[in-house]
Image 1 (cartoon, rainbow, N blue to C red):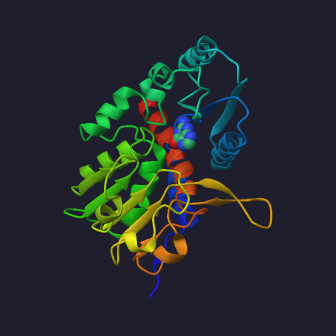
Image 2 (cartoon, rainbow, N blue to C red):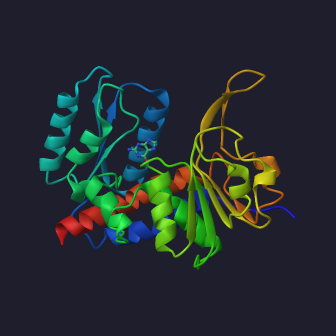
Length: 284
Ligand code: GUN
């Protein structure tokens, strides 16, 4: 028996349709600003996808481009200007930032009410207090996919691989809020395969292609793969690979996300949801 393949595009479409219905209740069109520093090709593609989806949904999307050698002060100036604009409801600063810029200082500069990435310390703190104000989009999308299979996570053992501020930590907080028993693992964890084998829900967000093998997975577990690593193909060109060795895992799990077309589309759909949520709160 093979696992149920969680189609991120289909779930994202359902979420987008429900958001579209909510737009009619707003007094004005919500605005999303994405800030991109530098010319990293992967970041450019992510930003384009976010703006394209915003516009398709009927939001106003705009991108602020800064060159890779822009200073922290330049970026703070752009954020201040966006914070002050009434027509902008959501601000997302695409990560990673160049090494000379302090990411935490930048996250702290975004107005928490417009922080559709959920990365401001105030929103991160709210999540850890069990209040889901503006929650980071990727873990939110992962939770939606998990709950499409299993609505009650009470008492499940969830294992998260990775402890980043963007995915690993908020993912663990969301699962804890659902009353799962959560184990957070990371690059220094000893005996990681044994820990993963105990997981009813396994979320991997490390960016190491093929790390999670089939024999790391408990039979019938739900497996969510957040990793996206560009790998050179033997015949030339590149492909995007997840953290999970899919061909092995699909024979053991009960449900699994593919890479691509798994978590990625849900991240973008949840960004739209957060933008509309921020716009609603600001116009209330
Ligand atoms: N880069 C990769 N994922 C993300 C994300 O969720 N938010 C931001 N701002 N940058 C990212």
